[in-house]
Image (tube, rainbow, N blue to C red; front, side, top):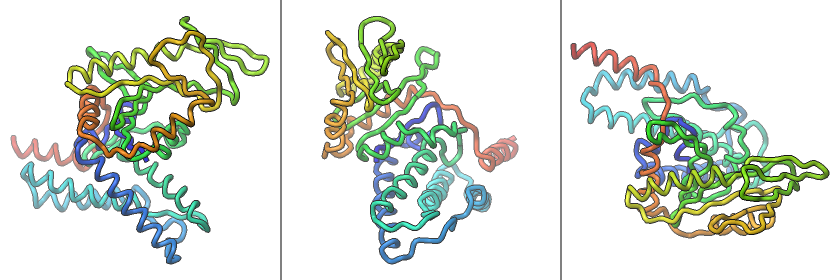
Length: 321
């Protein structure tokens, strides 16, 4: 599964330590899959709804924080505490919840992928001390599931990230950071079998059956996204090529005299490109991490302090007065 390092302007675990979480995600996913598969093979999957509700989990973790805060007061010791609580949080997040009988390994894989998808949304919207309000639509976002569940672990995904450029927020579309390059992607997907006639104008022609309408030229946003990322990685001294692609998995793109440097990944070409991304054997590279770090530094974050951490901060301030 690809790794969701940034979702909109939500606080992300990855922005707190980008060099740690990618390998930790891969390790956790592998461990939990082996554990779940073993339980399934032994007929030991838990009955329906065995896990503690999230509110109860939160209370339990907050109780742990209160007790431990009374013992550890130095900043370094608090960071160690955070790691301990975080490890506990990770185990809880990967608990198996079975609402139906799983009869085949394929069904088990689907259930596991859905579990990890929810886990990734949690990592992409919370840290130990902060949380962000997540739009519920992301839980049902087919494109986001496609990116996370069908691409490999060595690809980082930024989905609708909000970057602060010259003190102004700019929302981009989809960014994939692979070991060998950066992909700026935009989706052009409406009804099955839709044909798009590209041009250099502000609008493209969209044909579906006997209907003809106009859609905004997707290259406008794509070029803006590339321009912003090019400046960021150039300033950071990162040497990775930037690619641009328009994805239409259920339609066709026809663009006579199309501009160079843009791949139109429609129904005829998407699968070949997709398999190329999936089959890359390269591990996560340092230049990839450096590129992701450079981009994340420009990302805007909107979040709030978790209740217990906020209360602790107030108490610390009062004690210092």
